[in-house]
Image 1 (spheres, rainbow, N blue to C red):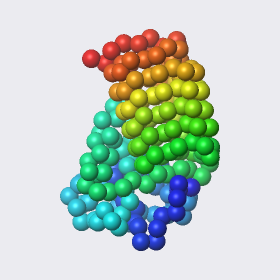
Image 2 (cartoon, one colour; image 1 turned 45 degrees about the vertical axis):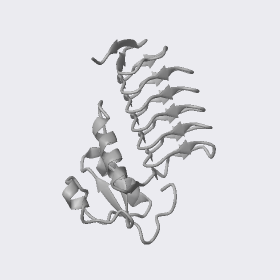
Image 3 (cartoon, one colour; image 1 turned 135 degrees about the horizontal axis):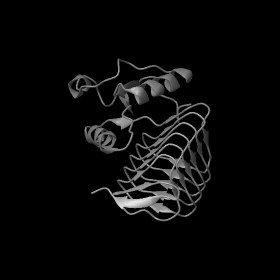
Length: 204
């Protein structure tokens, strides 16, 4: 479902046309909504639309770097646009969780008690964000990943498919947690963590 009803005088526009954008279109369709135009891949096209009359959906996904997704969100916010928060119909969101602007929670994902997911982040298919976790802005919790209780993930961090971050661990900003990794200890900013248990190294 959508996080709140779309006003009758607001139309939806998708930025990006890749695989993630296509999945988002299907989630919208399941909730009975459609786009006002074909997905937009050129900012010059967006110049013809009013920020007062249109909500944007960030269709830029990530496989590692989230810099493009973050840049698209920040640039269009600066231009006066707002972004739709989107929840698939089979997602479970606790009433005590907080999801901020532009957050996308996909099918069968779970966001539990008192968790916070900040602007422009993705909680992808089947991912679990447990109680009291914080997911930083423009991050991606990929398919099947699990954040156990009280985990903190910094901004623009990619948590790979089926990775697990154990209770109380803090992961910095601009990190990559590899697919299937099991993270037992804190991960500093600008790091990569891979393996079971995860071994941490700098991205630089």
